[in-house]
Length: 314
Ligand code: PEP
Image (spheres, rainbow, N blue to C red):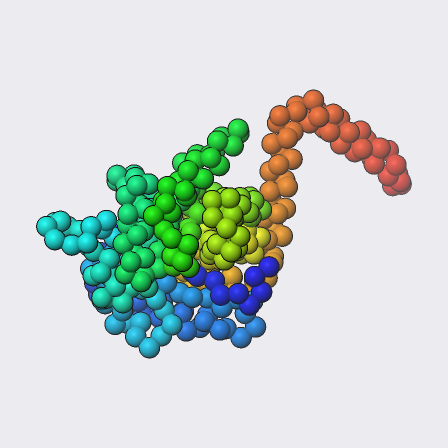
């Protein structure tokens, strides 16, 4: 368990809100959340609030967060240094605005054309300008043969290819299984499955680099995080924080996630484990209808026994 650990809770605002005045209003609420959970009394973890708004709102958020522990990040960066590149934003520009973290390799950017090669160049730009990178990795889908693990390893290796060992302290990995992003059916990874993945990512880093990089690298989880699953994801998943999409658009929902993580009750964890157990049993029984039938038979005969052993009322 990450007792007293500092967790990074990053909100990716994507292409929201629609106006700068809305962004300003939200920013003031995030600023209060950052102060409240930086070192909340009785909290199991202190939370570092990070908001990654669209580029045009970065300065507004920087001004709103002044004097508070809340950080401002960016959602992407150009692979180029500057010059005749219409529409691009260079890492030096973000650095000059005081951006602390830049998300790179988000699946929505990869879907728009970012390859591992481009991600590795962007990562190099971020490091060069002394900014932290949040490198997103994750499989599109899972297969029973475990091929997706090789795909993640390849993604990790290619994205980190241009870094030297000293650069790694500026990189945070966000494990975001693409199939779990943007879901409306409350499908995120369970804490247990996420923990397996975290172990695997650390093993990959050990194989590719060294023990110190593998153990010190911060790993976040992203993909349909909600107040219902956040406690399980953080405390059973053993991650160092979250990259939150839609649930971070609304400061109230974001704060609910922060409260649940910092002051866990473990009720959610127990509830979720019970649901998983029930679902696994249903799944297994579906696979083995004979077992299900014999269970039904047993239940029926138990009911009969119970009935016949009841004292008869006069
Ligand atoms: C994301 O876009 O990084 C993300 C995790 O989105 P959501 O939380 O909405 O699934």
